[in-house]
Image (cartoon, helix red, strand yellow):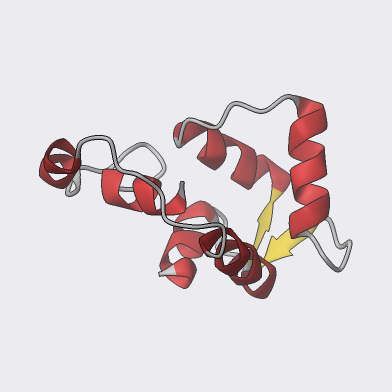
Length: 100
């Protein structure tokens, strides 16, 4: 699923996610970060310092986040009923919740 989510965020299909692709995707998921916070996040995700996030780096970050523990879902019934709807970035509600 990491690769599916990555492909949805990678608007230009370049095989890497730039800051200009990632920030709006995160904001669409409800993560409002200051420029400083976002730059710190990019620094953590972009292990090779290339200025973008590869699928490998993205996958590693998601795996590390999974180790932090399960996320509580507020209202699974509502989310399941919305899971087929797509947002502007092509992410379903289910995709958003999983990414969170």
